[in-house]
Image (cartoon, rainbow, N blue to C red; front, top):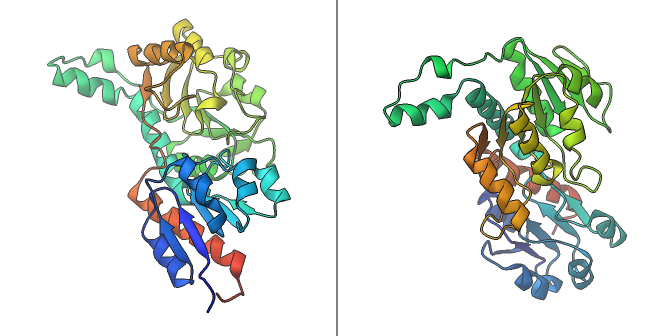
Length: 317
């Protein structure tokens, strides 16, 4: 009798995933409260590893993971895995962006309408017994041009939702071409800066995209615009954003992600930028919840389970 192959799940996931893995014959260790150092200490036991954001799977981890065949992210970003080293070690690494793309798109649309129509702002004012109608006269999304930086899973999902708003979508993607159709047109970053009323970021975090959205790019826009970031905090230079907010180049910004999301331990510069964001009514902050829905939790589990099955198919455990 052989030992069951073991999989470690380090973060909270839908019950569908561990149950499905057990049905496949794995011994599942579901430990959402496990600490990164404990993962490192015990990783040699496991054939599979399911992570979210607290565990980084780098060279040290993979060198100790002598049985590891796959590591997967319960979410969209792969910046928490050293992909090149995983390839060298013949470890499959994958994510599940299909699982939360619709959730992110819905959040981005909601955040944009909230800013353009002063929804959250006016709610607070009325609760403070302030009745400001004219001061909260909004702007309609219809007829505007929305620029998307990156046109992968979430960018496409957002563009799909925008189809009902009579907008032109200009999308830039360095690695994806030939997608122009209907209200969506492939564009350069320069075209987006020239024409966009809204800029929405859908970039993965890589060395190439780190602080890609900088002061030079933000300053190049020909008219004031709204900005949405539901991707990763470090693709956007927050200091540059604040400069453009103060100077009037950016009308409003919705930031679901920050450069450092451990807001209790910020550097001096990070703290100053965070305080400026908090103080400015034109900036909407949320705690990385764009893809965080009950539905996406289940969908992510379904995607990961399907991909793990693909690794072992047609092998029967």
